[in-house]
Length: 405
Ligand code: MLT
Image (cartoon, rainbow, N blue to C red; front, side, top):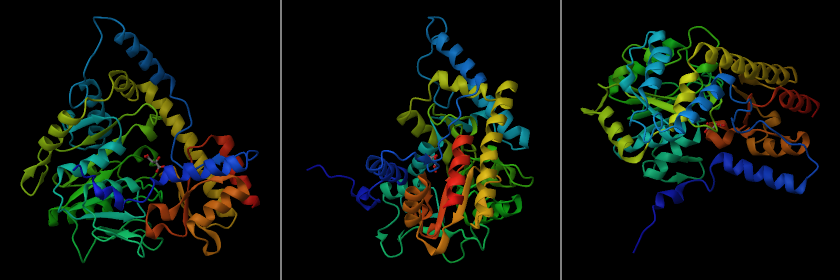
């Protein structure tokens, strides 16, 4: 008899953002007159930059001519893109990463959920709390997290590292139990917090001391505005010996609908004496046929002079929204953080309201959708996330409505 993977039964009923979409859909059906503004899921709203559209058109034309048509992409991605990534994202920042250590994919979400496959099931994972749900959920599906403790709102075998106002929303090094796999995301989703270089260096040193691997999600690095905040974990000494990094074009260049990302695995990185690069290459070759040619050409256009300048303009516009949200809420008396090096603003719910109560309250009273902090983990309770990815007009309307509430 066939048996289902019962690990899936340990998951919350819905992925967080699907649950929110369902709730908002139900609200809109019962309040058809409501003009709902969505600042919940971190999805971009600006159209693709002209330089990217130009590259897409050119690549589409190539696909229509026999002598320039392309079939399957190379396993790791096209060299024209990997070379640009190595040059602009790494070498220009003094990081020793070569093009053949870069695996191009259709996005960081897939990579950071699939990466656990190349590690043994008896590895213990550590995650920030609150955390982007994909890291935990993908490990639950694999059967690595133990049972869910309803009361604690947490999985028994996962090390949750609280990120609170007291530690600047960046985790302290675990002391009691040493994790094997450590998920870090900075600039952080959902809190918008960052780790300065010395603090990230302490994590790299810790991982190297204990033989742990850091799975570093740097999807929001393009939003860093302050000095001293690393854009890549490979800016830290010794990181090649303990870290894998994920990057995304989604938030950097508006590719949420186009899909493109990459993972960096240094060739000499080992776990328990086994090199990880060949394992991920084997997985990539077996389970994946590569991001589309036209999308990789669009990714290449991100690194042209025109592309970089247009994308800087888009990011500046989102960060202007972030400033408006941050200052608007702060002036209205909310306790707020984030929004300076990341497109997320993290606020404390007023009057000890739970995150979901505040979600309902905001939806009903202001017709604004955000994301309840508790959806990201137990330490997110009594917090709420707003994104800066809306249009300027909607962002201003949303914050003005919240201020009037
Ligand atoms: C978020 O809202 O946290 C992100 O958009 C989710 C994602 O990037 O998959």
